[in-house]
Amino acid sequence: MHSIFIPFYSLITTHLLGLLSKEKSSWELPALAFLVEAESICSLAEHLVELLHDGDGDVVAMTLSVFLNMLQDKDIEAFSSTAPRLAEALRPLFDNDNTQVQLLSLRLFQEVMELLAEEGRKTLNMQVHQSLVPLFFHLHDENQCVAEASRETLLCAASFLKRRDLEQVLRRQQPIKFCDCLMDKDVSRRDEHLHQALPYLQSPQQPLREVAVRFMGVAAWHMQDLQPVMKALEAMTKDDCSSYSTMQNAVLSAFRRAVTK
Image (cartoon, rainbow, N blue to C red; front, side):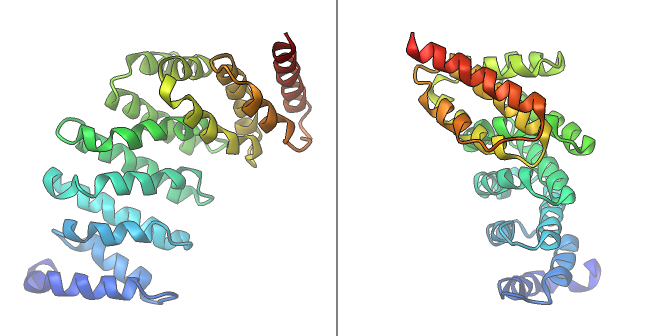
């Protein structure tokens, strides 16, 4: 295919993207499979980013594979303009129900950071900052492969941001200290970090719910206004896990005492 179709790459890829843009198309997977083998398709990356919002896990996984294949060329100039949108689209996939999608999105996010670690650092700074909280929570994922991939990606993110304090606590396996460092240094992003952590209070995974309560506790001591944290905890439904409920009640009691002082 490489030797025969080189003159027709542009025409073929444009036609395949046209097929991909049609809803409920039976051509999605074959088209993506072809694109995985195509070369020099960085110019089409913007169109491929849209496919990461598809509800079909197989389509998303194949699209992630296409991007990973594209990155093998290490063409920073051609890829840097798409990188911010791609990184933004990847973040929600860290929480995807499909394990393959989770693992591919984590790997791709890491490779994008490594590719742009020097020349394209400024274009990706905001997206990497916004990845810290989701990556932190998935350190505690019940799936060990996801947990390990999250750890590697979070270490890469800390290095990308030149946050040696975060790297150190991660290597020492001090998760609560990580929360403390994050909320202590990122003063302007405290509200954003808290907002990102709130959904994990309702995670289907018990370990993530427990970490979310601990995160709330650490976050609260760094914030002047305890009301947002208290409202989030009070809105929680009852949990079957006694340790979680005990922790939730203890944190709430401490906050109420602090507010009434």
